[in-house]
Image 1: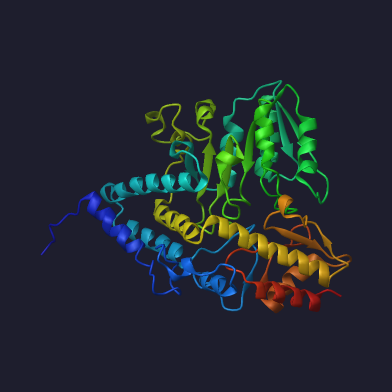
Image 2 (image 1 turned 60 degrees about the vertical axis):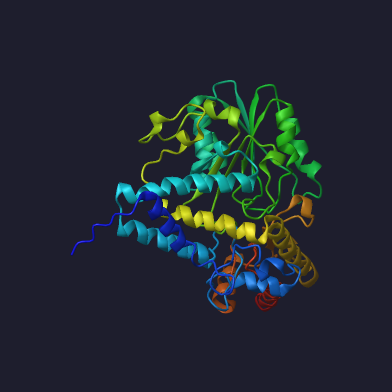
Length: 424
């Protein structure tokens, strides 16, 4: 006999959340990281390597694999992967408007969690598909014209460099690309070239928070200095979201962009866009989809009417925020700094002939560590590290290692041992 029971949207959402969050067990670290403050993991010493071994167990990494490629793509904790799967199954089971209504509530909940994590207001943050889309929302949305000037860092990602150059060619404004000293030792060395570049025509400064090609971290003071001179600031946070102890109010930027799939270790094809509230009405959308006309100019959600999106990943993104909250974003940031420091220290001590592209000083570097070995084929070493030693990095600017919380100090030593066998 046909079941006549039809659950209400609210009860459907409760059952869905219960299912997707069911993996959060306090008793078993091998499945998913608990979010309760009573967790033994939360109360253990993060300076103890056993703590980080437990964190590593939250991931389904292939046994033996040493993955140090966070600057490109990170796996997600099991709880996040399971939430993606549960959300997809839920949609496949019932793709009706009635069942999908709960995902609107999840979107609001996610934006609230992200706003708290970044220390901004919820109506200043919206969701995109990745950093590239967020960048282009700003590039194509600001109404610059002939006579205006945009100042860029030459180490910006193409979506924050080439995209501006294409738009400038179209609209007639000027793009000024600034170089900074190689291997800087102080924040002032990075700030000074931009100060010299500002003119009365400068409308915007845009830079990568951390360079994916050198590992240089730009000083947060740049945003405040720009604002003092009447210049807006845009920060590409692809390499800082999930790797730094972020506070966008303290950073002082007007725009911040990032993706969930790198250091944040979240679901793929999910991104964020922050716009300081007074500037939201000034932005034109780069895509106008169904529902755009229901928003007021000051509503940031009008900038993300992209059509059908993978709403099944909303609960997974929520789980990722909770993962970072459970450990503590300051602990995450410090762990990444410590591992990067260990890499740089061991490279210097074991390979005196090597050239560190990334600065040693923590105040001008992040989790990205790039090293070059003279007279070596870095592409071959990159492949042999993976094929012979199960070490995954990137052949960017030499060899790029970008460790995060699922890596261990023991793995840093294994990377050095492997390089010893490969460097002739």
